[in-house]
Length: 328
Image 1 (cartoon, rainbow, N blue to C red):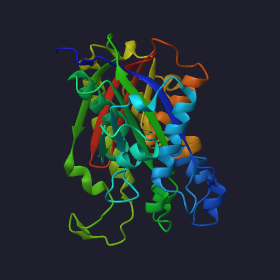
Image 2: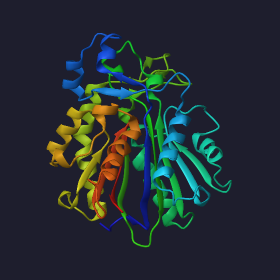
Image 3: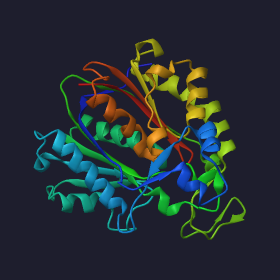
Image 4: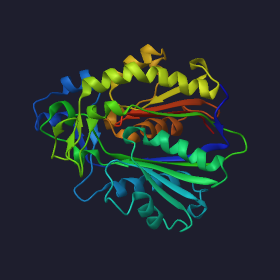
């Protein structure tokens, strides 16, 4: 199989998590659960949640601000395209990408695209940016993911409400003469949509009427689907990158559930001490979970220039997306 690559690299990253923290002890007072039950089954200790007047656009904008503060050489005026992934946008329209264009006074010639691929949006966004750069349409893209998932959580459902948190992340993907992003891959299995959904204008799904407009997940079914499908997907990404697991320095999967990722890493196999996660501090933050795990490792020096990062995400759809990023 020919190697899939793009003349692009990830030039900067940023994240944001709301100040308000919802601990397991807090949840014990809200629903029938316990810190021990949550930790044993998910690995989550706490999650960050939006305030009453904080919305997804605020999370996205704060993540972009963090990126620009840590990469002052990035001129917002040089951004050619904005790609934003979210399942909890402020509005149906205008889209979040256009709102960010306005908030940061980006050029009005910049494209502005929102994508809805749930937890897979960060890797999907990078892959889309690579396509735009590789065809010469643009030179620099701003890829942003943000979700205020706690606004869509049913806090009477103890199996689901303990899982999710809020946050935002941003990355600059730009042209590079030397390709540094490889193996871009995506997949979808729409038959699994019934296991993870949130209704909207249509309230019926799979014969069930759900007018709550809240997140619904059949956790056991999603767990089984991930272990049955994601390992093969990982090897497809690696094959398209012309690499093997031995070439990977860091595995950065979607932090959906610690027990799920432990089982996935064992099945590949890949060592957990080289697997980056954000689940304990932030819970499941959908597409934001990968950058929330990635950015601290970049800033504290664990990730070094030239390291190969295997990014793999999966979520509602059910969809998957992945790539290998060579850092620096």
